[in-house]
Image 1 (cartoon, rainbow, N blue to C red):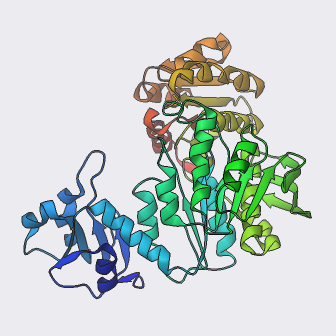
Image 2: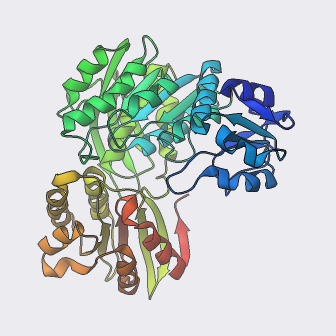
Image 3: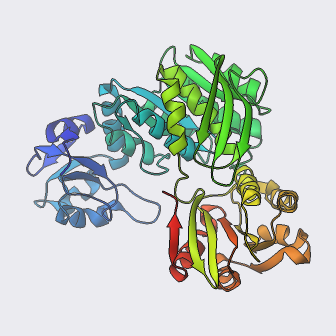
Length: 474
């Protein structure tokens, strides 16, 4: 059992809860999912999109939960079966506990948001900061209305650094989460046409993302991308808030953390940069130009935190892509090995282009081909069809040999490609899956990508189930 994260008294007090049953001496963690719950953790019975967490309270206690946090509406149902912390609203109670833990922290706190690259940047910060002090960050893309407070609840009191990812799908979602986090440093990776269904323009997205700066601790640092049309808008919004410092990053000549040059290879990149006037050369263990640019934001944050820049740059050599965001496997295919690049977690115009460009840098052997398996990019509003068709240019410009596509929006891309590049099309990923499995051959490099709702992940799982793994990214 892990070290106590909370005493029972302190957690119940933080939530303003009433206790039903015996007070646990210690609580070792926080969970909203009985599938991953560990003994000694508190189980928060929040209302999910599909299921009510109260359905799983008995299972949580059976697995050894220290207590379950339930609402007053269900209290009578569980009478006498405790221990329970009873609250008016479970999600609100988790927010209160998260806020209480944030108030106790003496750590340096970083918030990461942006249209693309949040999770990769968060993971890079976790890597470089953990080499310099105890660091806490969310285990996955826990960046929404439940993920942020849950991560705060899970943060140990004694960390030196804490990193939180903040996302949004609709207007008004960033600021409440940022106010829970109260960062000393806030990063906006970039502004791209993502969630356009909920926003009238890219400027509207920029304004929403920039609200993270309004929650900065007084004198904190705002880190912005110097290479996008919204740079000056972000700068003006940062100046209007409590930020005491603004650091820009990118290829622009006036960027405070500037990319001088980079050598992009299939698995790694070598980067020359100038960080606040200081030349820095480093190796980046995760491929792609977009990863290079986000690494500049990481080094900007390291500088703002007063951490060791040289040590951070050295650590970036050990960076690996998160699962579903570029992780690579070498599999035994029919007649020989092939490479699978898993980009299935999400997809938007910027990350889709980056994935295809990276596929173009991958070497193939023998009769191998560069194969793109693509699903719809969602939440793009009226611009969706044109943004999908527009991918034809990057496909044609990066040596992709075959495209397999699914979804009504990807039909536009598929139909716009030369017949020699068309592998197969299906209305849904389930229909595309057997066609991809039968098409794979030795020497191929296969990239699978699409929005989470396009269900490209099952295609990755099917490929890995059929073909034995020879080597995985370590």
